[in-house]
Amino acid sequence: MDHNALAMEMRDLREKVDGITDTAIAATDGLLIAADTAASIDPESLAAIAAAGLGLARRAAQATGRGTLRRTVTYGSQGCAAFYAVGDTALMVVLGDEGVDLDRLHRATQPALRRIGSILSATDPAVATEGV
Image (cartoon, rainbow, N blue to C red; front, side, top):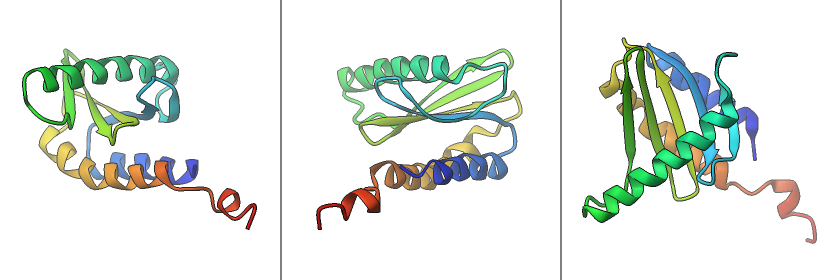
């Protein structure tokens, strides 16, 4: 997995949308894959909480016949946390301050999620050629 490419996607998203404060990518089982977070945030805990929340939101979407979950947003008094599904095996969490434009965030996130999904599913060329 190309961790540098994941870091670049997270930085790129932060540059495109004002108000993003932190980002992380995790497996749906809650294991941290990559993070760009402030020192005040424990990225492993964030990954675990995000995975649990996304799992509940997925079940709610299915139980109510709303189709495949794309995202869920939690609002707090100092901003929001947006949780995005990256296929069936990963998620991205984006934290924003109270000034983040969620419509812009949702639009900017879609191509980033596709690229992140490709990065996560890419086979390491060195592994793919071993045995050839």
